Amino acid sequence: MSWAEAFPRGRSAVVGAATFGLGECPGYSALEMAAEAGYRALDDAGISINAVDGLFVALPDDYLGGLAMAEYFGIAPAIVDNNRTGGSSFLCHAIHAALALDAGLIDVALITYGSNQRSNAGRLVSALRASPYEGPHGARMPVGGYALAAARHMHAFGTTREDLAQVALAARQWAAMNPEALCREPTSIEALLNARMISTPLSVSDCCLVTDGAAAVVMTRIDRARDSRAPIPLLGGATTVTHKEIAAMPDLTITGAAITGPRAMAAAGITPAAVDVVELYDAFTINTVLFLEDLGFCPKGEGGRFVASGAIAPGGALPVNTNGGGLSCNHPGMYGLFTMVEAVRQLRGEAGARQVPGAEIALSHGNGGVLSSQATLIFGTEATL
Amino acid sequence: MTDDTNAPEAEYLGLLAQGCFMLQRDPQSGAAVFPPRLRAPGHGGKLGAFAPLSGRGVIYAMTVQPKKPPEPPRIVVLVDLDEGGRMLSHMPAATPDSVAIGDAVTARIITEGETPTVVFDRAQ
Image 1 (cartoon, chains in turn brown, red):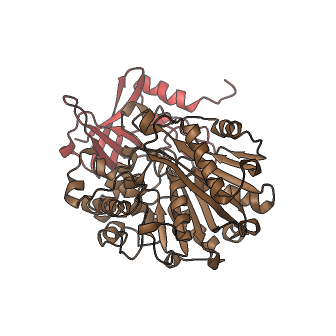
Image 2 (tube, helix red, strand yellow; image 1 turned 90 degrees about the vertical axis):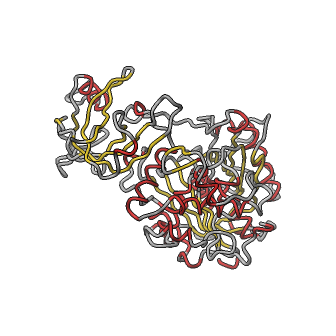
Image 3 (cartoon, rainbow over the protein chains, first blue to last red; image 1 turned 30 degrees about the vertical axis):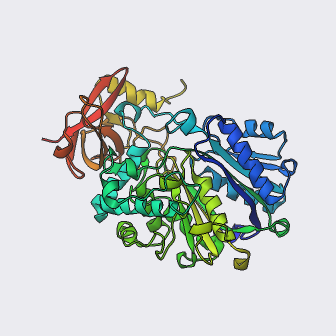
């Protein structure tokens, strides 16, 4: 049986979604932030914490965060998944939750995350250790890995810094319509291009924000989900890992999204043309370009020209990162869960001024490491079942 | 230590400390394997012993990371070795405008602190 045939299409759904403490959240620990987001997502779902029997967690500063989270909630879950594939962790969690729900092993899955890196450290908090092969070279990572990919993409396809700036500009234009976004003031291509260089060709404006933030979603089987106020079925999903360190990435212009995108869409029974709204893990501007190509929204090598056409900005043909993304909304270190929350809000029709009218199918894509782990989810409204 | 199995990471670094830049070869492809492994990545077959490299390679990707003056910017590269294998490294003797993707480079072993490492210069 293929992955697409085996995936439990539409047999589980997100029934609650929430964020907490986006931007700055001084005084809270990462654990407390993840707990509060979890409580709010459960409130949204109308489900009590003591009904949660599947707990899915990745915290920035705690190797055993799943254990800490269970203790904090005062529950003894049947499944605790502390899988950490980096920022994509939560999309992997959602697939594992869908399988466990469909198998009947659990009834309520809570996926939660919180990070206080901005208030606590003022920089990206990472539990990564440098390898003996890469450590001595003193390269700033992870930005250096993404910069190498951007440089290679420019070399291979003629992508320009202006193209990358268009990604940041579109993100800012979406963020302007999102009251949760940290950076909402207007900017320009010229201002973005003149920003301080971090790792050529990426300037500070090509890099995501460093913020606090927490998010959570609750999932149940579809039968129970129908009792909730606004269930959003999970239609498909797929994940892969192609490497850990950037030197081991087979081709720096092709990510594992070229595997997970087609697989997730096959599981959902859709093609890229059916997707109404796209939420990508934009830790750096090059991510958006690579993922749009690899997920099939434009041909390989055309991502730069695609974004420069205005396609992904408000009013464009393909709404991308409608919350403002990691570039302008928030990025607490592991951003993946926020792509899921925004996809759910869009499909529920609850995205306010930035709502994509009539959105029926949303794609959420997560990334971990240095383009190392990729994970794609396809959500739909009940009408798509 | 058992049988004829050596810890490959320690063996590679030990060879570097002696001034020898050497890697294992995958008998199936004939290509050098980096980083060193116990068995071949992908298929798990036996690897050949550590063998010398020419030290020649080509820049696959490059990024320049500015530092606080007077420290020069760090030129970080991915180098495809002629014998196979791609490694992350840097080019301490180069200037940002003097190197680009596609340039031929040669390896040199340096030791800063305790760990020896391989850096690259533009090929003459």
